[in-house]
Length: 136
Image 1 (cartoon, rainbow, N blue to C red):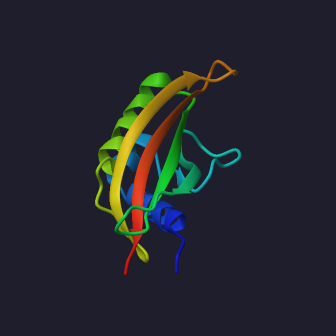
Image 2: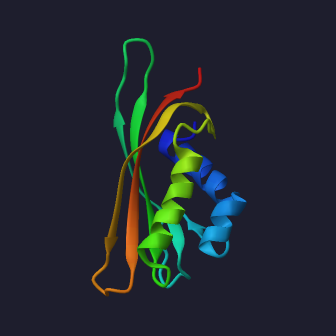
């Protein structure tokens, strides 16, 4: 059986990397599974996923905290916000198909955009909460 967090990441990556509007905003196919070294910016990276058991009375469920990072240099904060807005539009309440699991819910809980120490780059962190249950 596929781990629920892996199935979730795979579905999120597939959705984001296949979206023409997001590809246009990032200037190419720039969705990465983890923050890449020396990658062209702007980009979106699937960052850490934290999973915890949240079994209910009826079914075994897991709760996942998924963070996506948006990095921009030349486009600044405005570019980060535009990309973040598209990512949230795609993922918030999305009905994703997961291998061996059912996505019960996927909600954006937090967005943070900040300037980095180099004073040229901006990073946005988008925190999503997902709930999954195994297919029976």
